[in-house]
Image (cartoon, rainbow, N blue to C red; front, side):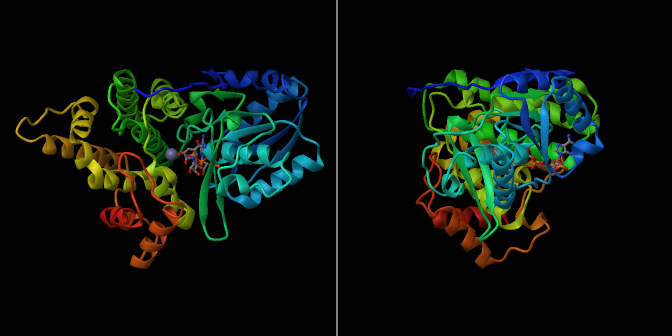
Length: 389
Ligand code: NZQ
Ligand code: ZN
């Protein structure tokens, strides 16, 4: 096990009715907030009114900015920075999913920064100052409600890049699983794939003696595997929604990566897809992750065999550990199909030619190799895109 520092400042407020606390929480930081949201689902399902009631009763003055799109765009970040500067706003409340929260994070570092906010996404410069943010989560998926990451797409060139810094963790996040009842099935399923991917990016390591975090990863994966079909069948099953919502946070608050070298190749490979073709991130991962596994599993067959037996409950094939390992990859792919996700590029509603695959592979490895389980160069990544076809 490697040395590590684990620190996560985000206060999690979880359960039914917890949105009633949002006004009091915001008041700890400011009497005035930017209320940031997405394409309008919160107005249709009543979340907007419930959050607004709580802000009103704490006397919080609100400036609204809606219109955050999935795979959130840099242009709206810049608009948000302008609004905050003009209206002297010093707190941002994100009500939505990863896209809204990531936009809030980008605005929060852009306001005090004199240069172009994209600098934080195109280089690994440190973040020294940010406005505090809070979140009310409406979809369990990205884990941005307590992660140190923000992922933004620059429209020009279709660059989807991240900034990662502890400064980006929200001050508080309110998680009411009932808020996820209105999710379209495709979003519930894509969210599940993203949560699983966050665990698997950490699980597939060559680090030894990480037994505790292995078991935590396996438990989180099993929780998602067991509860996602229930939530799809019964969208208002509180218990299933609650398990998935908590799994989303646990998967990406950095606890599961303690003491181990994490991978993250599949995320980088997927980000090219959603950056260039606006693919839903979790659906993109359902395509990329099994392809990555097929390409790299021989590097550590024992770990993949452990994944098969412990996560999917399948027997070890004592004549062939390799077959055991492949059984887990197949089980994952079957699960993604069963919950309604695409598992190859041809199932997407986009036209991707050979030249496009090469362009994505080159963009993905612009800064060198990606991943740690196996370090992948442009040719490796291209091969993974081809397997994914
Ligand atoms: O925009 P609205 O109208 O609200 O609709 C959204 C959106 O269309 C809808 N939705 C959300 N909650 C709903 C709902 N519809 C009905 N009822 C509800 N309760 O769902 C759609 C997707 O929303 P989005 O915020 O894009 O989803 P998600 O949370 O999956 O976020 C995806 C983004 O997060 C990034 C991804 O790359 C992607 O851009 N990620 C961020 C990470 C981080 N900051 O740590 C890590 C992840 O790996 C990921 O890369
Ligand atoms: Zn993700």
